[in-house]
Amino acid sequence: MDKKQFPILGIDLGGTKIAASIIIDTDTIGKPKRVPTPHGKENIIQALLKLIEEFKQDNLIVGVGIATAGIVNPDTGEVIGSTGNLPGWEGTPIKKIIEEKMALPVHVENDANASAYAEYRASKFKADTCLVTVTLGTGIGVGIVINGSLYRGAHFAAGECGHLKVSLNNHRRCTCGLWDCWEAYGSGRGFVATGYDALSKISAHQSKLALKKEKLTTEDIIEAAKDNDLVAKQIIETWHEHVAAGMVSLCHTLDPDCFVITGGMGKFVDYVLLKDLIMDMTLPRISEKLEIYPSSLGERGGMIGVAELVLDTFNSSAKYTQSLQKK
Image (tube, rainbow, N blue to C red; front, top):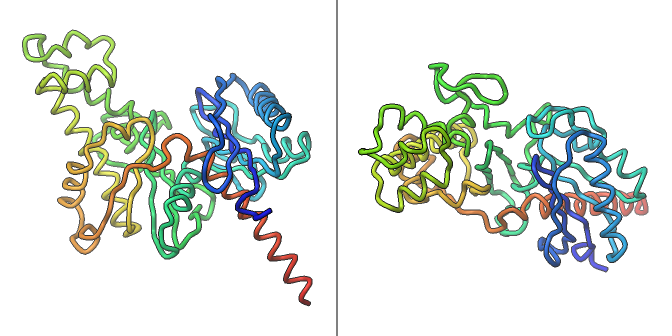
């Protein structure tokens, strides 16, 4: 069997749900299975083991890839940095536990990194591309692929760009505890926070959103904008400015060929507006050929990317074995 055709079980572990699917050649086979993410480290591990066992009963699986929130050491498969979405998850040796229980090779990766790698592999970008994936969801995650490889940084924390500082005013506290992180403005939470700021001095005569001041949602703002509510439209434009601010910093740091936007908030992005905003704030040499794409994989990206990383491990092992045989 061609290694590209090896069936890998890809698992995307998030704060609210766990999604899993068999992955073959950068595609999901069948409809992904989803279960709620339980509370507590031990319960999450048990949920992962149960999912793997269920897939093993009906499928040939040669490896397991797990994409998870948090800072991950991919060499040991351990979560070494905390994430507010999975309390108590830091320090969990996921790879060691799963391999001992399931007798299958396991690769564990940060979820944003996995999504970035999936976009690179599935979209057939050139090997010398610098691709940056920006996941806009409850928070902001960034994955960086340079010359065909993930860039993880000296401490596996590259891509924690949701915590770029975008203001010096100490206006919004991020979930990480710091002030004015990009995530506090450009994420789904930031979008709603911008809505509350805009509505602080607005009456119901000026915008129907004023009636939602006590419980404002993303959907409220989007629907109001569709009804030509000018305040809602201004909130959306301001949010785009916030998203652009972080991407501009990434432009000047990495000089990427392209950005890929994914995550639940990605469907609300006006790509023409976002590109215009970025060009206005970026050196021309960097922005003139910059491309910004919507994700081609959506929520499947984490599962597909981590499965591809399992295949890379197989290929590396095969090359190492071949080199020994030639000696």
